[in-house]
Image 1 (cartoon, rainbow over the protein chains, first blue to last red):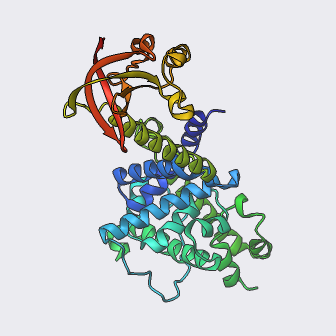
Image 2 (image 1 turned 180 degrees about the vertical axis):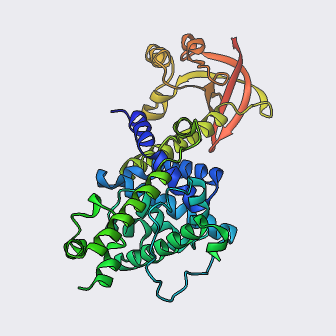
Length: 171
Length: 208
């Protein structure tokens, strides 16, 4: 298979997933498209260094996340806030709370979650990556990844529940 | 394991993808024996599936994949042995070009500043003259053959000074002087000296 065709197939296979990951991280369609393009640009230049063909997906997500962090640092938007350290209670989620939220609302709520917690949560929901692969993508210990996903998920579900409740009940 | 511990573990459970992960097995087994936990697990799994489906339902902007493919950079192979070979080739190429330019510059250096003189003397083939001190009528045939074959030609004046005969830049004078080998002629030309060796760029040949 020619290199051009191989690259084209790779783009077709992963550009959607990468775009969605980028959109969840940035909350901005243009930034997400730029990150996706940049990721494949880097792949075109450095992808041949990858030894295991099976790690391509992880490599692409790692690269996109790294580029996102670079962008954050450049824009000085890197928030130091973290999710409240106190132990979160496990929420009782109404069965239809997610049904009533559209994807735009989900993205908005995801955007309210601190980036450190948002990236693992997005990978948890959107990609078929094992926890070990998520940890590799984010260059974090497995335990940290699981802890962040759990806490971010609780926060997401809580905000989702509040968003869907009538105003007086939410109060 | 109690219900709370099982719940904390199963909060991360996503379904089939996590079935092979040992950390979930015990908690899943526990959930089978706890109807309340089982119900909570079903709700949270449904909720997970719904959120996942909605997020995965987001479509990239039209034309993005084509744009990425179109703007693909041409990869540069980082094979260091090939890079080394390429660098060596470039270095050799640059060196050769520089040498050629210098040589060419020397060849085309104008002799406009050189002094124009008239020289009368015997035409020599310099190879035989310098190597074996051969000249004169007895060596005429050999000298003619040598000059015709491209060996350097010269002229020796009556006072013993010898000049290397040259043509205009890029042109040999041998064909024009070969027939005068061992004969005395007068040459009008421009005198130059390179590294102590006298040269005469022939402009005109006058047979005596």
